[in-house]
Image (cartoon, rainbow, N blue to C red; front, side, top):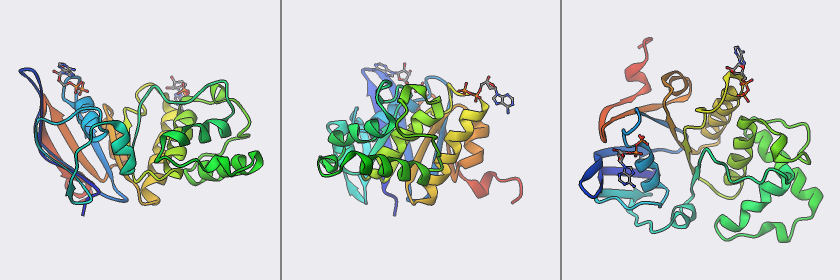
Length: 235
Ligand code: ADP
Ligand code: ADP
């Protein structure tokens, strides 16, 4: 069964229908790509799954049960973590410190109270490696990292603190070729670790490289919903 499921979800802002009748399933160990031009409804979809907006019609299910998110905290409590382009990292602080900075936001746990600094460094380093990222030094400030590496810090942190689903909002949009590769690598690592991923992108090539399922939105409706096997030219 999917971890998160949208059934016939609609969202209106006044008389603007941003989403109409949208179905989407997020499974453990699968990457669900959502494509669409500006105005297609991608941001609205993310906001509904991450607890920022309420849908007006249809159902949101988590672990098969109807869910009602009033705040992003409610989504986080169910293991749904959203990583936006403007990352919640503090550029002047070391990587390891940023890694534990978010912990007060994640499921109310404060493990750093019981960890000493060398231990926090090694946890941050190990979690980053597990996501396919090798940094020279977790003592360097986050501001010295590249765009893809900064995202990796936010992702590894979310996973360490219990995320089961990652919602990635256009993670490669502002990046060049090499840094996009860093992103695609952590997406693949997240899938390997059994997370469900929603990968929002404008870039069909990036979607094709990592996607297990593809949903194309157009003016708020699902124009295409296809598994990889259905779009694979080898099949
Ligand atoms: P995308 O992220 O794919 O560009 P959005 O979800 O941002 O799409 O927007 C979908 C539609 O909903 C657009 O027509 C947009 O103008 C409209 N919309 C989005 N947010 C709001 C809002 N807060 N108030 C009114 N209309 C909105
Ligand atoms: P960043 O994304 O942090 O700017 P990149 O190294 O990915 O760093 O990209 C820097 C610029 O160089 C971008 O314009 C990108 O398109 C280009 N670039 C990077 N790697 C390659 C490559 N292997 N082949 C061609 N262009 C590249």
